[in-house]
Length: 422
Image (cartoon, rainbow, N blue to C red; front, side, top):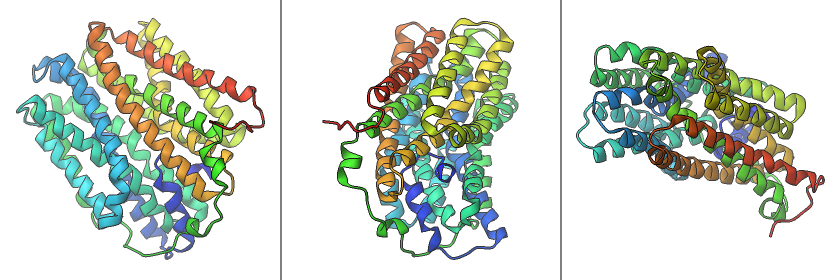
């Protein structure tokens, strides 16, 4: 159950229940669908969001924009992601998921091309915002489009393969971008546009056919209303998950710039550390999911939150390159790995109630996206306020995870989870 919805969007669990009504697909067709989903996640998040991070030092060095402007441009993608998450379902309902996914991949390709020409800060901001909107739409729709065609016994592995694109994108940008930067910043953006266009074209006809089918969730017996609207543990999860997601913003935005400029190690080392972050992003979801299966989602969230705090404090304190590499690897696991943990926690809180699970997960996703966007601009403002002290960004992220951890003490006061929210 936990591995069926590892991505963190409200539609996954709903659409995953379609499987009993979706037409059967051959093994080759399933793999074709998975390839389309992997391509979409790679382009929309792996390249469009994470690909910007290793470019930050060069955007500053080549005087395209000031340091403060570049940081705000990085945050624009997260603001767009919130918008995309909110409008994804209406778009999918109006034009169909498959068409929406294709159009979003084309839009992301266009944003890469537009960013090759720094006409103005407003121009850049709009295109970075649009890249986030497209990413939010893709992340909400992609799993629900594919999983109904995957055999139930294979859905967990299929989900992992689809969203492997996030980690692959991080690793790819860490290796590809330094090569492209040797030919210039404009060529780098155009190169990303070409790669995005190739993946869009290769996956264009790989999406599942449009099918009309009735959802199992629609006929399920919903939980009583008070379970989702008044259960304080669910609201506690909203806050914890949002804080965990927002804490991942600081390493995502500032890590490469800290290595490259803050420690004076240069762009090449910054890209290398970004590859380590990408390796962690590949390892994170299956590892976190395995721990959730063995120890429970709630215990897993507490365990990995403690680990994340230790790693962030380590980055704050250490100048040792080897230790920083280790910290980066572990920190990279957290952002994608926390999603299946949170999904599993929803299922723990609301067993046997798929409709309410979808409702709760939808709200949790919106809360997390909103706080991520606020955190992005908050960290940007703090970075300017402290005159570019990168270390304080990581310390701030650690504080956010500590707050999420402290919330765990609330459950000790009510082990049965019977208290009602106001």
